[in-house]
Image (cartoon, rainbow, N blue to C red; front, side, top):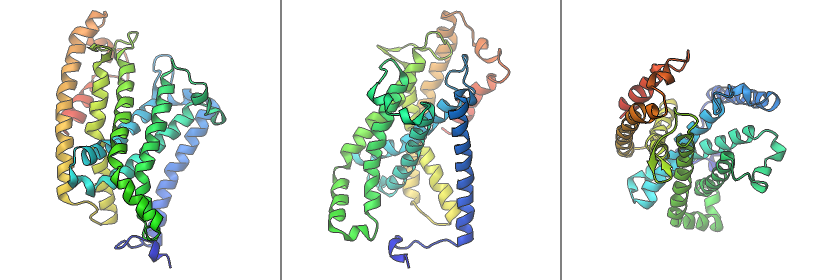
Length: 320
């Protein structure tokens, strides 16, 4: 009955398999709703936020989602600005993943600000001294850009595409997509860099503070670099997981290998810069502020040297 609405070549899965998938997604959704109400009713201390760890779990989730979702903008930048046409076979998938990631980031922001009915305060009564204001504006702007990039995917539906207006709109949007790709990449990189910049100028927290170039600490560039490096990796990971679950080949190996090669070079160069930055911080920056490396990794039962090893070697050098 609804076969005319399904893309050509696609088949509906069996109802039991569909329900299993929905049950898994529904369980995660219910878990998130429970966490959301915990934060709204009891406060952000539920995310382990305190005077010592001001970012806590929610900012970890926010930063992670923003970084891995950045693969959509970086892939779009490669496709539309640098004219790597081979990536046309994965760009739509990257946009969908990015759309999910950034809509999730906006939801995290809605939880963070407290009372949802006052969410508009952050725009109308903006506190220009608050990092949260920058986060809200950047997230809203590049989510809007990503929505524009996502619209052609909807308009290419078999039935919608029969409507002349929608057909021409989708075609024309593809023609000007380079503008939105460049805008989205700029906003995304600016936001990721500013988050790193905040950490880099926090002189009261020597674990994060860094020297830099003019007004920008090195973390400004490292955060942007890491998002551009690891974002496409997440796109490839989700692609492979989806292919494994569905048993269908979604993207050709040539495209996968090309994007993986680009991401691999980005990771390698990032890790070189990260290692240099870490060594300089441990041997020059921290000692100049009266701290040694052991101060950051031995005075806490959880934050041991294993975190540094996992960050640099396991999650950086090995993948690169």
